[in-house]
Amino acid sequence: MIPAEKALVERLKEKPFALIGVNSDPVGKAKAGIAQEGISWRNALEGSTSGPLPTAWNVQAWPTLYVVDPKGVIRYKGHDGDEMECTVGTLLAVMESEKEAGK
Image (cartoon, rainbow, N blue to C red; front, side):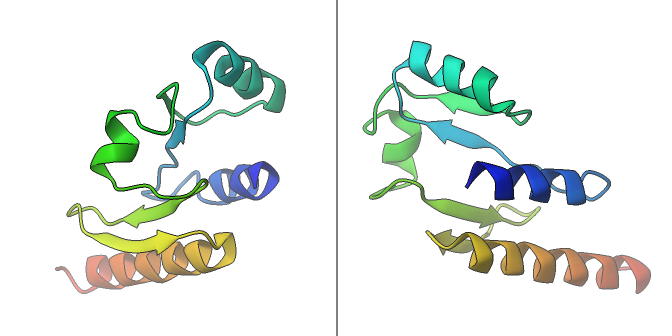
């Protein structure tokens, strides 16, 4: 998924969008992987699948993808990168439409 995530981050760099990773690998391995892959977005290094973030967000499988709107509402939770990207596109379009309408 990393190449697709890199493309998404690059494509949306001028939009109100942020990608945040939650990594369950041991911290040393996670840091090495982030450096090796050239990952530029923020990552929480949990060190296990049972850390505070996976527990609070009820992550049952890796990777789990979330789309959260500016109000903190989860708009998508799942494992399909294409579906997640479609949700992001739809949400950004709605936000731009609302901005143009002065909402």
